[in-house]
Length: 552
Image (tube, rainbow, N blue to C red; front, side, top):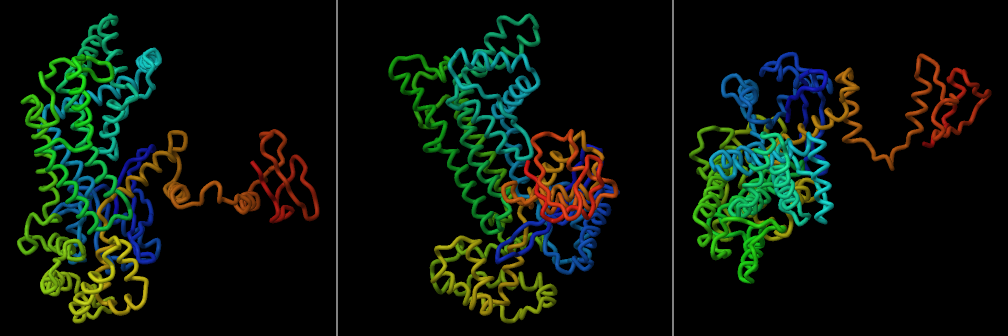
């Protein structure tokens, strides 16, 4: 996995992460961070190669199975991209377009195609900017929340690295029971009357007009149901532990849930709760409201049946669900089986589709059908990775026989295990790792295929946190070391500082003065001395023994 970003010193850096098998499970490890000389495909390949050279893996391309990156043309271009250049030397290599990025594009397509969804997005973005960048507006919002007796929470950002979860969080805060919907409505109403600035008045009326409409409130609740489902999938795909079979199963489950939203209100969802609440108020001859905000243009009869809702609301809900489902089906067509594996023209995409046979949930229940299930796909995988399998001493002629025994074993004894646990047992326990040693070569290939480049995004988050404006001169090597400590180092509770402090004192070319009187009083130093004691201006050298203790 690799991705690039620009740091605070306006340097473009490339983060390179490798995915390996450890104790039968796939893990991601930071290989290194390099400063890009050029941002084109050759420059990225040079940076990646340099990182492998650092760890003395000059022939890394012989063991390269797959790479994962976002959908930029510099990465996945068919002629001049990184994928095309790698395939010239590694014909079996599989290029994966980051699945969470694809998921975001499917949701963005739905938002662009639906004016109501775009309107909700603009409102959330407007609320965040209003209360994030204006101290006066935030202060007034908190004061109004206290007066109304509600909990004060700032509107959340609707966009970010994890875009779908950010949008779902922003909607959750707006519609939560903390009263944020009512507080923002009251504040907008107050500003629309008292402000002397016509632009501010216009923005307040823009917010007020939408928040006081039944259709807008109901659609926000539906959108929260939809985005909550999508966000769970997004977070699952961003996990380092997610493997290809579980990713495909999760996408299929999400797609089924989205498709049902086109025909009925999600049971137990936010929209159903909103409709039941407003219907109860209507039956009690009370004014239909949300958190005390009176909703205008309320239908005469409110029901949880999707077809009985106002025509424009029902249409927007169905269009949103349908567009999202179409986007998911289109973006993940090869993985979901929308196209038969034998009809896929791209060899690498066909290989990815063939790996679905290692998902026991897709196996037929009928024993005669199970005995021959997946043999054609397995044979294609053998041919696709033949050179690599032979190089790793795999008996390709024994794989089909082991595959038949493998299906019988899993169907009889391992139905209770999830994908990761199943393959961890087979790769680490006897007699399985011996009985299926040739088949396990392909299983290892499947496990190391990355489905997300989110690990690179986490590296850049740490880079932004560590290399701040006041530390913009940090070198790439120092930055990489600090990121490793931040991500892989021990916790503060488990960290023992004595060796590091002792090295800091002894390895300096200039005197260290740990007993300097003007240091903070909270720093208590206990030392044991060999032959001499320290004075205020002493030079710390071999006089300090390994028993020096620092307590802060």
